Length: 147
Image 1 (tube, rainbow, N blue to C red):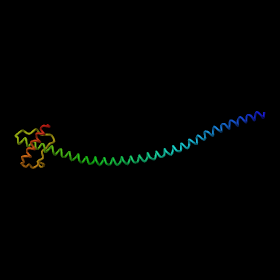
Image 2: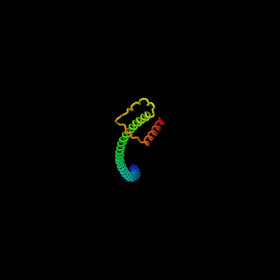
Image 3: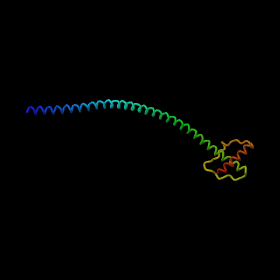
Image 4: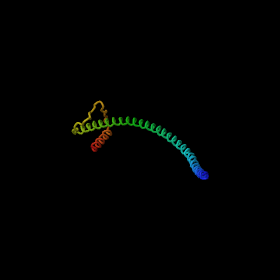
């Protein structure tokens, strides 16, 4: 019986040695993969740092572009207001010119226009200049052609 027990122990020891070799191969592979994993983690940390830096740069660029755009919008609002004033003023002057030319030609003035009040204080002082009168006539013709 002791021989059977010795054979049984030999078989168990052989199995343990075989299992030890298999386990050793797996541990070596795991350590090799651990080194690769450490390299991968380091490169991931570098990529994360670069991405974070890029996000801060992008935010700074966006903020500066936003400020520049706001300044441009603010300036353009001023220009728009000036243009609206000039357009209103030009329409009033054109209406005054048209009324004066119709009066000089003896034609009946058109019916009252909504929102176009003649402001006597803002009427330009007219000098009798033949070139200016010709320019006024051409302007009236152009205005009539547009209407």
